[in-house]
Image (tube, rainbow, N blue to C red):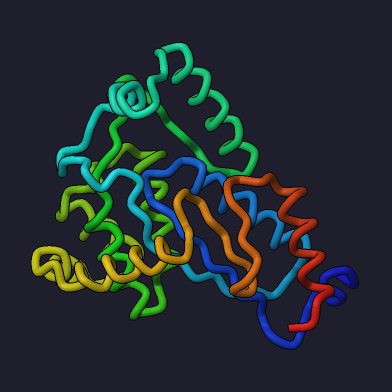
Length: 222
């Protein structure tokens, strides 16, 4: 398409996304951004970065209703309304949320370590999408190391190596340093999306807003 050619540039647009796997708006925000990228044709490269929404979550996780009530003081009706909004927002970008009475939130530190390892093999983006789906669509126990190794295997990574990475906590310090670095840069909520290493956009802005941002950036020299 001619419009897509007009939006190309000398080098791909770098997009850094700071997010957590158990953050529903991170999955939605990425879906919106992906649609905007598809519709504008902007050449890009995506880099994912770790953030723990709830680092004190135990490994067995917490019931999501209970977690939201404790963290935000939300009533059951408010939680249900929020779930409905997220489900519809996800559906609009092709992502399925399957919330139930037993939906849980999990500790994500091991997931971030696995993503760090996958990045060394050029597979971080695929693993991130697989983890979003495993958690929100298929309700898998994503804090369980065997489950995480299975998910890595399902996208073509070595299961034994994935499990070793997790049991050894091989990249624990790398993940902590990365998280600290983003906190020092002022990132306090997710998703935080940084375009061209200088333009910060927070939250799920919607497809049209992301398209507008991309079109503006495509017209700027890089």
